[in-house]
Image (cartoon, rainbow, N blue to C red; front, side):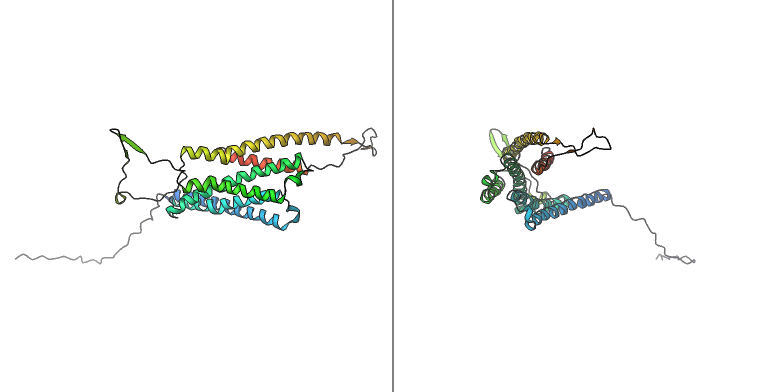
Length: 298
């Protein structure tokens, strides 16, 4: 019978623990990039909410701002506030998580809010430009045209039309393209879908519109209001030039004495005039131009 003998070393054995360097995750740059993007987008959302709330409070608290035309500005601020709260917030989570965590049912609602608020925003800009046009073209008849009732009805129609363009077709499923089909042996069959247990499904929510809905929605929500605003501000620019020429015609040299000791150089005093409405139209024109510049590529 063979015996197995285990030989132990005569010297002491000391247990040692090797300290290995912590491996750096391969997706660390991607995580840092997402964090930076999240901070930037969150800052934009915060500034949007803060700025639009500030506009509403300013019009509500300042009596000088409680004008009929500023109701369109408040409506525009509310539309942009909805964009920040109901659209951008969920879009931020969707982009950072690379998936839609809010359920399939809310996906279409989120898309509808996106289309509705964006449409209401550009409609309000169009209404503001029309309000400025009437104010400059017919200042005496402005109060007759732009009453509180008229402006309230116009704002109501803006939001109703925006909801009809967005919620109605999207909730009916008319905004998505038909499922792909294949014609095999003159028989139309739908493309087979693999079983759910064979595919790891990641919930996604994207603005995937059918060509028909995209064309109709773009024409109603963007191109037609864009053409109206361009036409209105072209006319406003024409009236502003006439206004400047009339102001220059009112300036007369009035000799008050010598200037720098030279009696041949009389001082001139310009006749008083008001250009606040022209400046307001120019300011709104810059805002609308910036809006169109941001929207045309989209």
